[in-house]
Image (cartoon, rainbow, N blue to C red; front, side, top):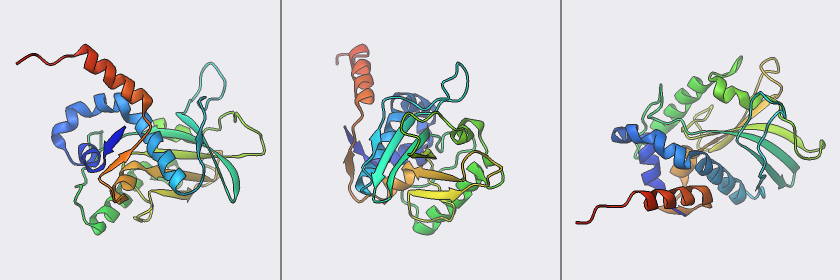
Length: 221
C-alpha cells in the first residue's frame, strides 16, 4: 500500500480534529504499520530483517506477550529482537502535539521531553504496558542467538534529541533482565524521509479496509 508520509505524521502528531478517530485508525492499522516501518528501516540499513509469524511469549497460560519477533543478520552476526509496538500519539493521554513543520531545534527538544516521560534510567519505562518489553520471552531460535528488547513507538523520541529514528540506551541491571533497550520512533523516521509517499506491505490493513468498503457504502447522490 502507498502511504502519504506527511499526512500520516500530521494525523498522529498535529491534528486535534482527528482525536476522536485516532484509536479507531490505530485498531485498523497501528501495529502492522509500526512493524512495517521498522522492517523498512532495518532493511534500508542493511540488516536483513525477518519477522517471524509467531509472537513473543513466556509460553504460560498467563503472563506478558509482545507483538513480534524480528531477526536481523549483518556483519556482527544474528540478533533477535522481541518487539512491542505502541502507537501512543498526540491524541493519547499526556500526549503532546508536534507540528509537521517544526524546526530541528523544536523537534530535538520535543524528543527529549517525550523520552523523559516514557523512560527513567532507574525504573525503565513508566507505563507497565510498555515496560513488559523487558520481560524475557522464550526464544524460538537457537540459544546462541542473542535476544534484545525493542520498543517500536509512534512518538518522536530520542534520549539526546538526535536525528536517528533508531537508538540504543543502556539500562541499569537492577531494573530488568536486559542491560539495553533498542528504540525505534515511527514519527522520527517518517519526518526524516525525503519522498512524499512510501510503499509498505500491510496485508491485514488492506483486508480490513476492503471489509469496511464492502460493509459501508456511500449513499447515491
